[in-house]
Image (tube, rainbow, N blue to C red; front, side, top):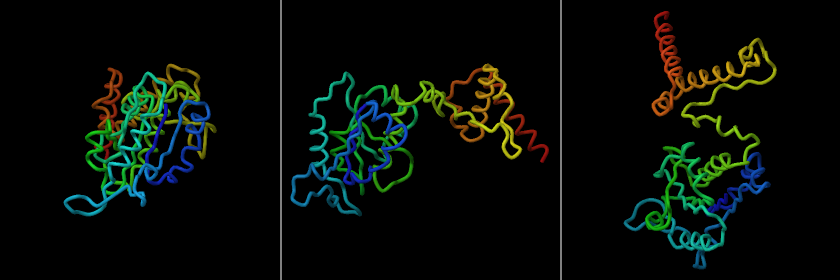
Length: 255
């Protein structure tokens, strides 16, 4: 997978891609990350990438010419792959980035060209005639698309084959099966009087799996009930949810 990040602040990305999984994925050729300065694709002597909006109003708008020049130049490069490239604008108006969306990007494309917006956004003609989709990482406003682009690179990379140390790590993540992740414990087995659940050190794999599923379900029920509506729940899951609700009612009665 190749990531091309278009920005007016290339220095913004110095460092974040040099650690952990992303560093290892680059070292082993799983991904390639290229940072491109949009100013180098301007044609005027002042290297202007933004201008005042037609019709008046606050702020500045990113000009279409440098963006079209940059992306068309990148697309003209010969990249051998059976999968297409996606041209993605990081925008608060875009589709919400979810685990399912990250997996779709990882599976369907060999290259993501991530356009980092700034100011009041980009000229609408870029959206209408160039980008293939807009992506948002949440319903809030940031100063630019650089941080969201980093999030996309990280989320997509860890879903690529051979990016993680374990083939099952990504499969067991939160949101992969519609639920939050189960609680994790490590040594020591007892810390300040708090013991690890006994089942986790029992060596009984079936019981461990059962405990983890129930614990993941409880955590989701406690913190993100909205996820349960879309999760694939088994009869056992439904029974546990009923038990959680009954426990809650009993606690209210006691108080």
